[in-house]
Image (cartoon, rainbow, N blue to C red):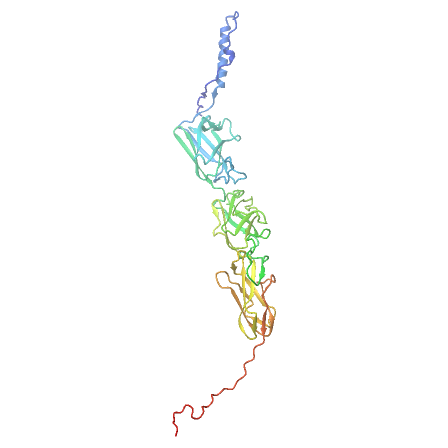
Length: 461
């Protein structure tokens, strides 16, 4: 075993004031006094020198350094930072790892040898001393502007490398001594799910197998005349259609803890859909951040839909994962007004033709497609050509209902949302009159015969 390098002396502080004080008047001494004074002075200088010695020496170029991180996989960057630039807790782990150094010379522990450590790039990782689990004599910390690690009795030293910002990418820990370096790569992933996470999904309740949000028809009104100027707000306070949803994911088999506190971003890509944390949807946003729990499931949040509806897309992403294809929901428009208008007020029995016009309108007074059921008050008076129809939208002509006047009487058209009994909207009444009797046959008039001699060309005898 090679002997340790000699200790490096530090510059000593000034000697105690007693050594510089004015000497007192000498007293008669015995012949042994000079020897005793020399011994005492030597002991004092030795004690002062020992107090000014710092253990350690720079590892020689022939030395070897081995690095090993306790966390075998990647670390995770911070998702959000506070005003001071510090990570906001709780955060996804692992975000730090202990790193062990083994210093040797001639295959022997380099007790007291030290090296310098830095992170590349510098913003990728922060280096910190390890207060515990250090062997005797080992230390790591900032010295003379550099992070220095000194080996203990067995040649080991430990420190901590931590991701304390939102930087992500491929980082390196570089150990330098003499004219040599040794590197340890460390991957820092963006906060969120790693690529090998599975079962990433958006789960929403109350949609059925068709991923459809149905109309409630609660605000539906009836009219037989012109449209009102205002049909109400598209987001009705206290009556906004909403569905509770969650995000879930399964961790990789070799890293079961990485899903906890993994941030997930949910974003509505449609102007008539929003996100909220309250069931009434009074406070809405287009972008929401949630954290997965220990089981890989997020707390519930709310999908909110306006009465205009549409094809709604909800983007969901987390770290290296994104839901593809983007989840899509069909939100039926909420009808505000149903107009049922009779085209004729009187019709003769036995006459077929266009009898009614039916249209539905949304909150913006735009005609929309709505499935409805059709009945008449008395089917012995008027017979309809169809029992249900989907009303036409703005891109085509209004829906015309045809029928046949069967027998004299008066009746109305009744319209309800398909498969619902209410609300029911009725038209003006149509009166069916008796079928007119055919006209009586009349005799054909003949032209009178011309009088004799009329128009003749003969002269007088």
